[in-house]
Length: 346
Image (cartoon, rainbow, N blue to C red; front, side):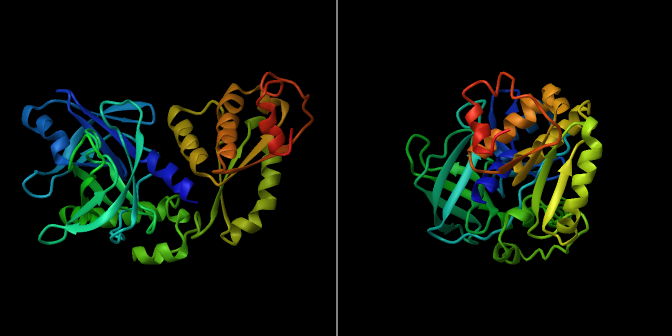
C-alpha cells in the first residue's frame, strides 16, 4: 500500500523552471493549481520572466495566482492549463522522530529523485516550521512535498536546507500554514478528493479518520474500494460488458472501482487519464485477444506498464483470455516471457 502511495505522490509533482535559470519543485493541490515556495518564482514576479511547469511529459506556462513573499510565509500558488492530474492530500499529521519522504527535482536534473528524512520537531515562535534531518535537501527541491507515511498525507513543503552538501536536512512549512494563507484551499481539497478517491482509498480507516475530512460515500467511489483497471480494445466491448456484469455485485457493495477506456484512438487527454489510473490501480485486468495483441498502444504501453508494476509488486495483473491466441510474438519469445509465466502464463 505504501508503494502505491509513493507512486501517486510522484504523479502529483511538477518541475518548475523560470526563464532566468532558477528552478524548483511544486505539486498539485487542486485542479490546475500548483503549490511551491515563493522564492522559487520570485524573480519571475519581479522581472516578468516566464515560468514553465513540466509534468507527465508535458510542459506548459504557469501564472502566479497567489504570492506570499519570503518575509511572511514563502508560498506561491501557480495556475496551469492541465487536467486529469491527481492532487496530494494535505494534513498536518506528523510527530517528532517520525519518518518523512519527499520527491523533487534537484540540481538541474530532468528526472525526479526520492529523499528520506527524519522529523526532529517543530520550529518557530508559532511552531509553523518543521525541522527534519538525516537527508540531503539539495537545490531545486524547494517546494517539494513532505509525505508522512504515518498519516499517509503531505504534512508540509520543503523550504530550506541547513547545508546543501551534507545530510543535515532542513526546514519545511507545515500544512497548517498553507491552509492559513490560502483558506479556500481546504474546501477545494475536500471537493477534489470527494470526486477523485485515488489518494483517499490508499489510506487506512484510521488515517482517514485522522484527517477529519469525513468524506461521504459516493456512487462512483467508496471508501476503501480497490481500483480495478480494465485494459481491452473496442472490438472486445461485448465481452468486456459481460465481465462487467460479474463485477457489478462487488461494485454495488463498494469493494471495487472499475476504470476503463474503450477507444484506442482516444485523444491525448484520455490517454493521459488512462496512464494515471494505470499507475495507481491495485488490480489490472488484461482482456487478451488477437485484436488486443494487434494494438500497438495496448501491447506496447498498457500491457508493458502493467507487467512492470506486477514485477515490482505494486499491482496484481490478471490476464483473461477472451479468444484463442497463438503463442507467438517478439515479447513472448524473449526473456520477458517469464513475466507472463509468473502471472499464470498466456
